[in-house]
Amino acid sequence: MERNEIYAVIDTNVLVSALLPSQKVSNPTMVLREVFKGRIILVYNEEILDEYKEVLSREKFHIHQALIETVVNHIKNTGLELERTKSWEGVFPDPKDVVFYEVTLSKDDAYLVTGNIKHFPKKPFVVTPAEMVAILGLK
Figure 1 (tube, rainbow, N blue to C red):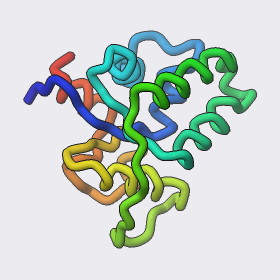
Figure 2: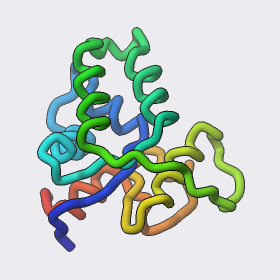
Figure 3: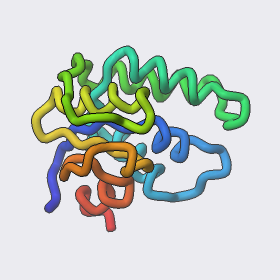
Figure 4: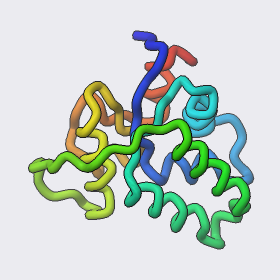
């Protein structure tokens, strides 16, 4: 199933994987490339942007601040900012993941792309980077 434009919330772990200096072509990097091409429209809120900035700025990742600013500014300029839709899906292993899930619920047909699929309820819209690459018809 190939679609032209896809709305998605991207979990921080996917963004980190895509931006690591040592990262070559991988599913997370392919997903981020499609964001910059405009094929994936990121859905976000301020909590998500704050987490992106905080996590990506951690010294252990060695991601240049200019790259972080470029990514965050691109998301703000081209993405869709939405509020959370409350979820009653039970307990999440990491409470910080709830915002990603609830913002995804705010946009019909949006996906949640995560490397930690087990941290979220099993739903068709919760996908791995590899599954998103397949949805995009890139593999």
